[in-house]
Image 1 (cartoon, rainbow, N blue to C red):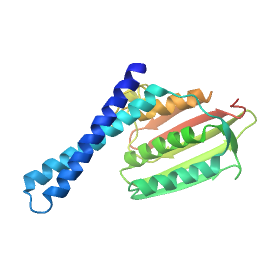
Image 2 (cartoon, rainbow, N blue to C red; image 1 turned 180 degrees about the horizontal axis):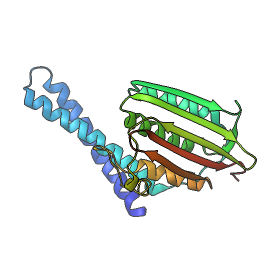
Image 3 (cartoon, helix red, strand yellow; image 1 turned 135 degrees about the vertical axis):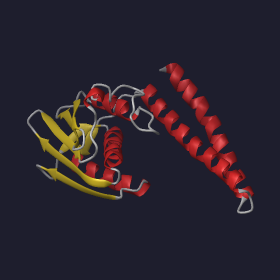
Image 4 (spheres, rainbow, N blue to C red; image 1 turned 90 degrees about the vertical axis):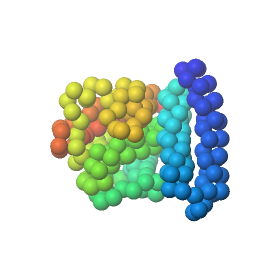
Length: 217
Protein backbone atom coordinates (compact mmCIF):
# COMPACT_ATOMS: atom_id res chain seq x y z
CA UNK A 1 0.00 0.00 0.00
CA UNK A 2 2.82 2.44 0.89
CA UNK A 3 4.68 1.60 -2.32
CA UNK A 4 1.54 1.99 -4.44
CA UNK A 5 0.66 5.29 -2.78
CA UNK A 6 4.13 6.73 -3.31
CA UNK A 7 4.31 5.57 -6.93
CA UNK A 8 0.81 6.88 -7.65
CA UNK A 9 1.65 10.33 -6.26
CA UNK A 10 4.82 10.55 -8.36
CA UNK A 11 2.99 9.39 -11.49
CA UNK A 12 0.20 11.91 -10.92
CA UNK A 13 2.62 14.82 -11.02
CA UNK A 14 4.26 13.62 -14.22
CA UNK A 15 0.95 12.84 -15.90
CA UNK A 16 -0.34 16.32 -15.11
CA UNK A 17 2.75 17.79 -16.78
CA UNK A 18 2.21 15.62 -19.88
CA UNK A 19 -1.47 16.55 -20.04
CA UNK A 20 -0.86 20.28 -19.66
CA UNK A 21 1.92 20.17 -22.26
CA UNK A 22 -0.35 18.36 -24.69
CA UNK A 23 -3.07 20.97 -24.15
CA UNK A 24 -0.59 23.75 -24.87
CA UNK A 25 0.58 21.90 -27.99
CA UNK A 26 -3.02 21.52 -29.16
CA UNK A 27 -3.61 25.26 -28.80
CA UNK A 28 -0.39 26.10 -30.65
CA UNK A 29 -1.10 23.63 -33.45
CA UNK A 30 -4.58 25.10 -34.00
CA UNK A 31 -6.50 24.37 -37.19
CA UNK A 32 -3.47 24.64 -39.45
CA UNK A 33 -1.81 21.39 -38.36
CA UNK A 34 -2.12 18.15 -40.30
CA UNK A 35 -4.69 15.47 -39.58
CA UNK A 36 -1.89 13.21 -38.34
CA UNK A 37 -0.66 15.84 -35.87
CA UNK A 38 -4.16 16.51 -34.56
CA UNK A 39 -4.72 12.76 -34.18
CA UNK A 40 -1.45 12.31 -32.27
CA UNK A 41 -2.27 15.17 -29.88
CA UNK A 42 -5.78 13.81 -29.38
CA UNK A 43 -4.31 10.39 -28.52
CA UNK A 44 -1.86 11.91 -26.02
CA UNK A 45 -4.68 13.79 -24.27
CA UNK A 46 -7.02 10.79 -24.27
CA UNK A 47 -4.46 8.28 -23.02
CA UNK A 48 -3.17 10.73 -20.39
CA UNK A 49 -6.73 11.13 -19.07
CA UNK A 50 -7.15 7.35 -18.92
CA UNK A 51 -3.86 6.77 -17.09
CA UNK A 52 -4.67 9.62 -14.68
CA UNK A 53 -7.94 7.85 -13.88
CA UNK A 54 -6.14 4.54 -13.34
CA UNK A 55 -3.58 6.17 -11.04
CA UNK A 56 -6.32 7.99 -9.13
CA UNK A 57 -8.21 4.74 -8.53
CA UNK A 58 -4.98 2.95 -7.62
CA UNK A 59 -4.23 5.66 -5.07
CA UNK A 60 -7.74 5.41 -3.64
CA UNK A 61 -7.43 1.62 -3.43
CA UNK A 62 -3.99 1.80 -1.78
CA UNK A 63 -5.09 4.37 0.81
CA UNK A 64 -8.14 2.43 1.95
CA UNK A 65 -8.86 5.20 4.47
CA UNK A 66 -11.20 4.56 7.34
CA UNK A 67 -14.76 5.95 7.08
CA UNK A 68 -15.77 9.14 8.87
CA UNK A 69 -19.20 8.29 10.21
CA UNK A 70 -22.05 10.74 10.42
CA UNK A 71 -25.80 10.70 9.79
CA UNK A 72 -26.57 10.38 6.07
CA UNK A 73 -29.93 10.72 4.33
CA UNK A 74 -29.73 7.68 2.04
CA UNK A 75 -32.64 8.60 -0.26
CA UNK A 76 -31.25 12.06 -0.88
CA UNK A 77 -27.72 10.71 -1.42
CA UNK A 78 -28.85 8.20 -4.06
CA UNK A 79 -30.85 10.80 -6.00
CA UNK A 80 -28.04 13.37 -5.82
CA UNK A 81 -25.42 10.83 -6.92
CA UNK A 82 -27.33 9.89 -10.06
CA UNK A 83 -27.94 13.54 -10.89
CA UNK A 84 -24.24 14.34 -10.47
CA UNK A 85 -23.35 11.38 -12.70
CA UNK A 86 -25.57 12.84 -15.42
CA UNK A 87 -23.66 16.11 -15.31
CA UNK A 88 -20.33 14.38 -15.97
CA UNK A 89 -21.27 11.81 -18.62
CA UNK A 90 -23.90 10.92 -21.19
CA UNK A 91 -26.70 8.79 -19.70
CA UNK A 92 -28.41 8.28 -23.06
CA UNK A 93 -31.93 6.88 -22.77
CA UNK A 94 -31.49 5.29 -19.34
CA UNK A 95 -34.70 5.29 -17.29
CA UNK A 96 -33.81 5.76 -13.63
CA UNK A 97 -36.29 4.99 -10.85
CA UNK A 98 -35.95 4.72 -7.09
CA UNK A 99 -38.26 3.07 -4.61
CA UNK A 100 -37.78 3.61 -0.89
CA UNK A 101 -39.90 2.03 1.84
CA UNK A 102 -39.53 5.32 3.67
CA UNK A 103 -38.62 8.74 2.32
CA UNK A 104 -36.31 9.24 5.30
CA UNK A 105 -33.78 6.44 5.66
CA UNK A 106 -30.93 7.59 7.87
CA UNK A 107 -27.61 5.75 8.01
CA UNK A 108 -24.48 6.30 10.07
CA UNK A 109 -21.88 6.24 7.29
CA UNK A 110 -19.17 8.10 5.42
CA UNK A 111 -21.18 10.16 2.92
CA UNK A 112 -18.30 10.67 0.48
CA UNK A 113 -17.42 6.99 0.42
CA UNK A 114 -21.04 5.91 -0.09
CA UNK A 115 -21.35 8.40 -2.93
CA UNK A 116 -18.32 6.75 -4.51
CA UNK A 117 -19.99 3.34 -4.14
CA UNK A 118 -23.18 4.46 -5.87
CA UNK A 119 -21.29 6.39 -8.56
CA UNK A 120 -19.29 3.29 -9.48
CA UNK A 121 -22.31 0.98 -9.48
CA UNK A 122 -24.47 3.42 -11.48
CA UNK A 123 -21.71 4.04 -14.02
CA UNK A 124 -21.16 0.30 -14.47
CA UNK A 125 -24.88 -0.19 -15.00
CA UNK A 126 -25.01 2.57 -17.63
CA UNK A 127 -22.06 0.97 -19.45
CA UNK A 128 -23.67 -2.49 -19.30
CA UNK A 129 -26.89 -1.14 -20.80
CA UNK A 130 -25.04 0.81 -23.51
CA UNK A 131 -27.05 3.97 -22.69
CA UNK A 132 -30.44 2.28 -23.10
CA UNK A 133 -32.40 0.43 -20.41
CA UNK A 134 -33.76 0.64 -16.88
CA UNK A 135 -31.78 1.33 -13.72
CA UNK A 136 -33.78 0.68 -10.56
CA UNK A 137 -32.80 1.31 -6.94
CA UNK A 138 -34.76 -0.02 -3.99
CA UNK A 139 -33.96 0.58 -0.32
CA UNK A 140 -35.63 -0.66 2.83
CA UNK A 141 -34.69 -0.18 6.46
CA UNK A 142 -35.05 -3.26 8.61
CA UNK A 143 -34.53 -3.59 12.35
CA UNK A 144 -30.79 -4.15 12.26
CA UNK A 145 -29.83 -3.27 8.69
CA UNK A 146 -30.62 -1.29 5.58
CA UNK A 147 -30.84 -3.27 2.34
CA UNK A 148 -30.25 -1.55 -1.00
CA UNK A 149 -30.66 -3.23 -4.38
CA UNK A 150 -29.38 -1.73 -7.63
CA UNK A 151 -30.67 -3.47 -10.75
CA UNK A 152 -30.04 -2.88 -14.44
CA UNK A 153 -31.33 -4.42 -17.66
CA UNK A 154 -27.90 -4.65 -19.25
CA UNK A 155 -25.93 -7.43 -20.89
CA UNK A 156 -25.27 -9.25 -17.62
CA UNK A 157 -22.13 -10.87 -16.27
CA UNK A 158 -21.00 -14.35 -17.36
CA UNK A 159 -21.21 -16.96 -14.60
CA UNK A 160 -17.46 -17.62 -14.71
CA UNK A 161 -16.77 -13.95 -13.96
CA UNK A 162 -19.13 -13.47 -11.01
CA UNK A 163 -16.63 -14.73 -8.43
CA UNK A 164 -13.92 -12.39 -9.73
CA UNK A 165 -15.61 -9.02 -10.19
CA UNK A 166 -14.54 -7.66 -6.79
CA UNK A 167 -10.89 -8.64 -7.33
CA UNK A 168 -8.45 -5.78 -8.03
CA UNK A 169 -7.61 -5.30 -11.72
CA UNK A 170 -10.25 -7.72 -12.99
CA UNK A 171 -12.30 -6.08 -15.73
CA UNK A 172 -14.25 -7.01 -18.85
CA UNK A 173 -14.16 -3.45 -20.22
CA UNK A 174 -11.75 -2.42 -22.96
CA UNK A 175 -10.90 0.77 -21.07
CA UNK A 176 -11.65 -0.37 -17.53
CA UNK A 177 -9.15 -0.18 -14.69
CA UNK A 178 -10.48 -3.15 -12.74
CA UNK A 179 -10.38 -1.15 -9.51
CA UNK A 180 -13.87 0.35 -9.31
CA UNK A 181 -15.65 -2.67 -7.82
CA UNK A 182 -12.66 -3.53 -5.64
CA UNK A 183 -12.94 -0.05 -4.10
CA UNK A 184 -16.70 -0.51 -3.70
CA UNK A 185 -16.14 -3.84 -1.93
CA UNK A 186 -13.55 -2.35 0.45
CA UNK A 187 -15.79 0.60 1.34
CA UNK A 188 -18.77 -1.64 2.11
CA UNK A 189 -16.61 -3.94 4.24
CA UNK A 190 -15.19 -0.97 6.18
CA UNK A 191 -18.80 -0.02 6.92
CA UNK A 192 -19.22 -3.55 8.35
CA UNK A 193 -21.64 -4.33 5.54
CA UNK A 194 -21.93 -6.86 2.74
CA UNK A 195 -22.36 -6.75 -1.03
CA UNK A 196 -23.45 -9.59 -3.31
CA UNK A 197 -24.22 -9.77 -7.01
CA UNK A 198 -26.68 -11.77 -9.10
CA UNK A 199 -26.63 -11.67 -12.87
CA UNK A 200 -27.99 -13.37 -15.95
CA UNK A 201 -26.42 -12.85 -19.35
CA UNK A 202 -28.75 -10.94 -21.63
CA UNK A 203 -31.13 -9.94 -18.83
CA UNK A 204 -29.22 -7.80 -16.35
CA UNK A 205 -27.48 -7.54 -13.01
CA UNK A 206 -28.50 -6.81 -9.43
CA UNK A 207 -26.15 -5.70 -6.66
CA UNK A 208 -27.48 -6.05 -3.11
CA UNK A 209 -25.85 -3.94 -0.39
CA UNK A 210 -26.54 -4.58 3.28
CA UNK A 211 -25.42 -1.94 5.76
CA UNK A 212 -25.96 -2.35 9.51
CA UNK A 213 -28.16 0.32 11.05
CA UNK A 214 -25.81 0.69 13.99
CA UNK A 215 -22.66 1.34 11.93
CA UNK A 216 -20.42 4.08 13.27
CA UNK A 217 -18.41 5.29 16.21
